[in-house]
Image (cartoon, rainbow, N blue to C red; front, side):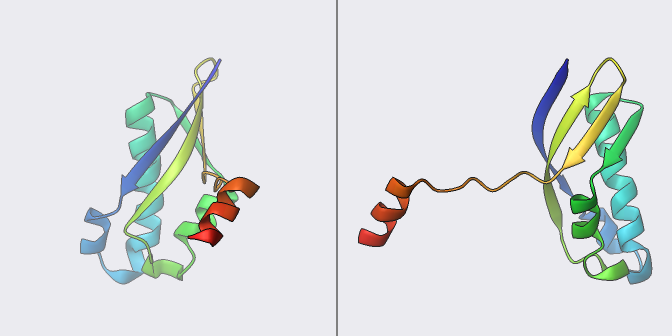
Length: 99
């Protein structure tokens, strides 16, 4: 059985570190937070999340990240992904254009 939830992780404490250590620490903090919150032994980070964390190199250009976490309790594994943006329906687009 796989559970799914949205989690926001703040990197506030990471910004007190030197610039060249920030992205590495952010990856570790993300893993640690997910392991602590969902009580799993292994955390896998998707390439999209990794790309977002390393987008500015070691400088870490983001303060927080919202991720979708899929947890497999049987294997004790959590997979971290970026949430997909919801697409607007045609009706919502027409209403937005009229206003």
